[in-house]
Image 1 (spheres, helix red, strand yellow):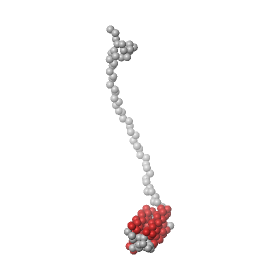
Image 2 (cartoon, rainbow, N blue to C red):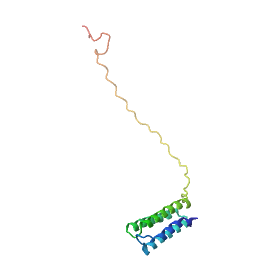
Image 3 (cartoon, rainbow, N blue to C red):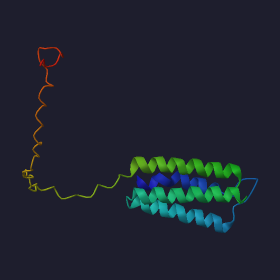
Image 4 (tube, rainbow, N blue to C red):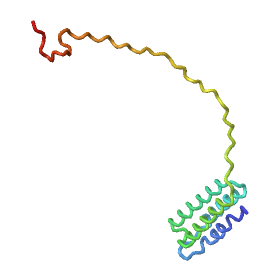
Length: 145
């Protein structure tokens, strides 16, 4: 099933050079076919990341070829559609790698901090009130002599 992932891309590569606007050089066509082979190999190996990476590289090359005038606009569009389909199929049909097994965490003793005694400062004694100026019942009339 993995090898079917790229059937659409292979058909699209075969279209390269069939457009009226520009013709794909033999070397560019061979590069695209080599990238298709890399995608196919990664897919058959079950390497999803490598397959998607190769498809990304292929999309970049299609963009560059079209920008350089070596690939007809219609052919570039067909290749981009084929690459997009192949990416969807690769994501659907190639399983993601299993996450690496990690060792189960072991319980480690966490030391409990021991409280340390701290000296609490004692406030200095307050000054005694001055005689004759306290609050009394004479309501501020002062002492009579």
